[in-house]
Image 1 (cartoon, rainbow, N blue to C red):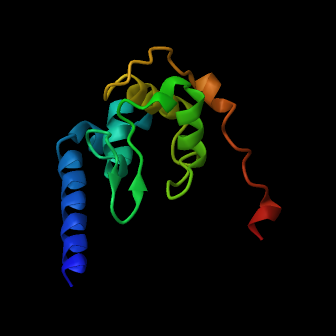
Image 2: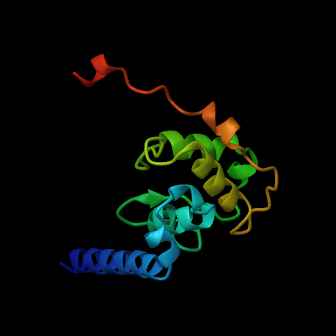
Length: 140
């Protein structure tokens, strides 16, 4: 019983922090043109729900790896592939984010949270990691 109560309480805290973050960023909510959304805003509204606001990750109902001070981010290809294709419990975001948005959020994470990787990823580089669009016969 206490484990179930703890899980419910943790879920409420996680949901409220996500709602709080979104409520504090009206530019994201009011943006009519998604091209003007920053990498920081993408992190806040998509990534931090699992990886936490401090990017230190979480464990509980699932395992969400830390992005803070993460040596795997030294290669910009690694986070770009993870964002595009997902892995484990992380969903792929290739259908949600365009190449520039993927580059922006990857560059944001690689230059924040104790990460100091300044070689910026470009939208052109991200394009190489984008899976081909599904064929009509694949949907049958």
